[in-house]
Length: 251
Image (cartoon, rainbow, N blue to C red):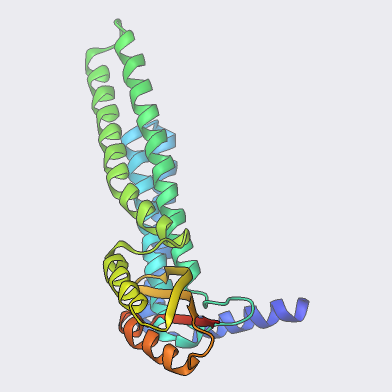
């Protein structure tokens, strides 16, 4: 186990050191971006500024997006990382989806927190009738800005979380749903094919389609002929997405 971990660390270090300057710059910028977000958050906590704290959360989210872009660029540069293995049957690009989904969930939780804090401070400020008018107006402006930031966070995070959640749940992508249905209906019209079972089409990563299905045929049929027919109908949907299609003939 120790040797395996050392090997993984050395291979990761090799990938980082062998990256071109542009990708190293992207990684460095993500770290700087994250540090800036943390510094803004500390400043916001120090001066009790909700708007500044909310802006810091957005900067941190943006830094996570830059880091995701860096990971995507590494996966694109080193195609071997996308290859299947026993440990990672569909390559490691699934981690790219997980990181993006985690970032979207982070922003959703932050949006809820900022909305709650903004409304709570607004109500408390409204009840302080004897407070200084100028400071109360500044407080209302700060709380209003924090509520606007929370709405912006919801607007950004909900579509991203929904799209990436569907990928992680292995649902059939809506963009390919109609084409798949048409192809499957056409396959069922073949005289030697009795039925289709265990059909499952989903995305492993952005735009990468994966599909499996069992084709039930007559006992005396030529399996290779049926396979060639099924692949001829479905493979065009997978070639463009660099996907994987697995077909099993059942007699």
